[in-house]
Length: 202
Image (cartoon, rainbow, N blue to C red):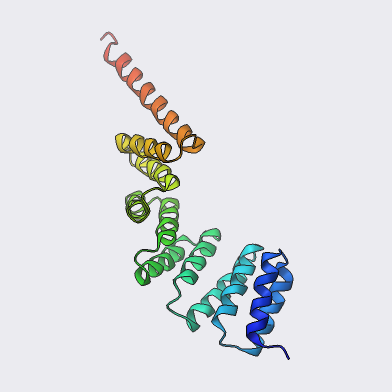
């Protein structure tokens, strides 16, 4: 006789093998057998997310939170799906909730920073990325995106330092290298234009 736990395990195995449609059916069967099975809802949401069925993922993640309100991963996953749907304000709420429940949740801080950047909230984005670095000091990717956020605020010296730190941590990191070179070129052009303007005859 089938039971919900074994079906949930089967669904996870199917996802790992890439059989998402089959996994979705299995998770649904597990939920039919055990309607308060939060883990099956979470895994169903993951399966929906993997195949781009974001509206359905949002529904089942919210149900999982209703059943298991302290699962920080679910808040973060829901935030990611909402961000994919460009529902940024709601995504930010769920990332903040994940952080409230788990103040050292690096992924939630990073994802919060991404969403804040999309909204143009660069000061808050910078704060979120700095928190990631505080918790995970060797993260070259976050130093690069911190550089981008600082550049957006015209904090050019700090942006250069962030890009350089990213390259120090990950030599050959092309994205950080390109961002650094682009910023240095831009600053050089600005300096040349300023110099030309200063030497124009009256």
